[in-house]
Every structure is written in structure tokens, then in C-alpha cells.
Length: 390
Image (cartoon, rainbow, N blue to C red; front, side):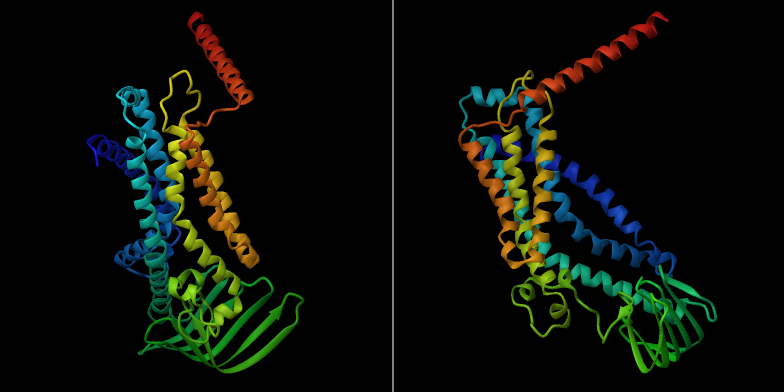
């Protein structure tokens, strides 16, 4: 790699990190604060909370990374153009590949990083996070909840125990579940226990009162009844793994006897195509950024910052990608759409770069922006003058 290419790559990568880290921190903080009840309600330590926050991070990185790349590329190339570095490169007779090569190399590397994160890091992180929540609920029931007091586990779910014995054995269980708007569930059980893994609450010798929306009540007696403490829903044992929790190998060749796959095969199909297409966006956005900001421009040509164009197009393309993934869950015939969105965008960008075409603001929009800017300047100038006279 030539010295100039290394210089461009270093500047873009630095701007990429400067953009990625603050945005990622803000989104990560919002996601983590939504789970602060793990500490406040279940009595977990801050160390456990920090571990859970670490598991959340891989689910955010692939979403934020492409947009941070767009900002890093457009801001760096625009700054180089404003500092006359781009015109000097052109005047020296250098080919456009000196600018294109480092940008495309970074786009390819981040695409591969996104693929690895999405398919091999994110699924086990999701499972580990849900296992931690399951264990926290188990501790909440077996050691934290006070005897003879109601405790809210989550919205619409309340638990009371009469006595707590050693070995995670609970006496006199009373569970109220109002989370489903179609019916209310009230559980009574003489005895209950938490399994060794801390992921399941088993109630024994009790009954369930179910009240439907129309007021009808049914009573079912049971010898044994199990709750999955991670999702706080009925489970036949073990921690359920949804489509987002599964490995890539399972999504490529799902087990037809899997209960969750039998219940919702469309979700597994959509998740597979999402994982195999999302990693294409960093490279597609790198090409898009080159089209927007990769050519030398005079200051008179630049009415709107290139970053505005690039982010607008990036958000539009990403929205089309999300919509295409949702279509895949509706019918298998839509399977090519998640791949077509980034690939077609990349091909259009490559064609524009090969033919040296540039994105330009439509004439009517440019005139409107110019009029609006001029009007604002005149109003500000008149207010400043009035204020000075007064």
C-alpha cells in the first residue's frame, strides 16, 4: 500500500472510530438502562449487571457500524477536499484508485467483521444474556423475595410465597399472570422448587384458574407445572432458543422436529436471510460514500454537506433492507430481496464510479434551498441591524 493510501486509510479509520464509539455508547447505555431492574429487583451485583451489558454489545455493533463508516468516509474526504488535498492529488496525475483502494479495503474488512459478529458472536451472547436473566429470576424467587409479600417480577406478573426452605424449595406459591390480554391466569401450588440450573420454576400439587376475556372461568388441577424463568412463560423444560439465538449451521439445516421451528418456521427463514445479507451493507455504504464525496468539488458546488446526502441514502437503503427481510417471513419467494438491496445499490455505485458520474441536487431543490438560505440570511441580518439601532 502506498504512503498516500495509508494516510487516507488512517484518517478515515480514525474518523470512523470517533463516530462509532460515542454513538455506540449512547445506544448501548439506553439498552442497558432498560435492564437496570436486574439489579434493583433481583439483588444482583454490579458485576453481573456489567456482564449482561457486555452480552448486549454484539447485538448493537452490526447495526451502528455501517452508518459510522458512512460518516467516517464522507467527513474525511470532504475535509480533504476543503483543505485542497484532493485537488492536489488530481493535479499530480494520480489515479482515482489511490482514493478508492483504502476506502474499499476498509469496507471489505468491516463487512467480514460484521459477518463474524452477526453469525458467530451475537447468537451465543443472546443465549448467555437470557441465561443470566433466568438465573436472576431463580435467585429472586428462591432467596430475594420476602415471605408472605407480593413481588412484581415484570409488568402483569406477580408472585407470593408463604415459606422458603433450604435447597430452593418454596411452600405456598401464589402466581398471578395478567400479561396476556386475552385471558388472566392465577396459579396456586402447595410446593415449588427451582432447578439446579436456575432456569425453571416447578410448581407441584396445585391448580390454575383461567379467566377469559368474556368472563368465563376454567379451573385446571395439576400435579406438576413448569415455568421458564428467562421468558417467564410456560416451558416443557430447558431454556427455549428462538431464531435469533440459533447458530448459522442450525438455520442452514434446521431440525424439522424442533418445537419452536415447527411453531414458526417463517421466523427462522427470515433470520437466516437477515444474517446472510446484513454483512453486505458496510461495503455497499463504502461505495455509496465514494460516489457522494469521492470526487473533487469546488466550494461553490457544495450547497449541502455530502454527509447529508450519504446518510439520507444510507438510511433509505437500510430501511429497504429491513422491509425486504420482513417480506421473506411472509413468503419464501421474497428470499432474494434482502440480497438484492445491498447488491443492486453496490452495482449502481460501481457504475457511477466507473463512468465518473456524480450525485447532484435536482435543480428545483437546489433553487428552493438557495431561496430558503437567502431568506434566513436576510432575516438574521435585519434583526441584527434592528438590534444594533435600538
